[in-house]
Image 1 (cartoon, one colour):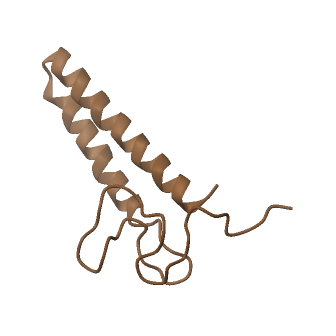
Image 2 (image 1 turned 180 degrees about the vertical axis):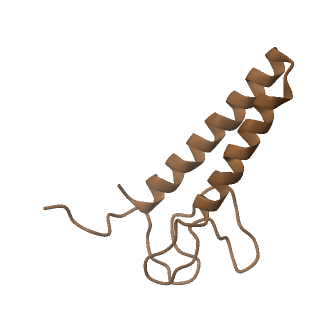
Amino acid sequence: MTIYRAAWSLVFASSFIAFGGLFVSAYQDNILYFLAAFFILFIFSFSWGGIKCPECGRSVFKLNSIIETSWPRRKCSRCGLDFTKELFSRK
């Protein structure tokens, strides 16, 4: 699995949890589901920062030195490494 694909998997998983929590809290009239989804997203946000470029260590979600996006980049903004390619070959 490429770094780019792993990052998108994390984005989709966290979005699924967020929208699921909003959907359930809207129909159950209970804020606890929304708070649980928010807490899980808060935990996911720490793992978003854990997906880094293996060459320079910059986050996959960094646009430049200040702005961080909610979608992964295809290339590293610092060293230019392509995240869509396999880094290690499987034998």
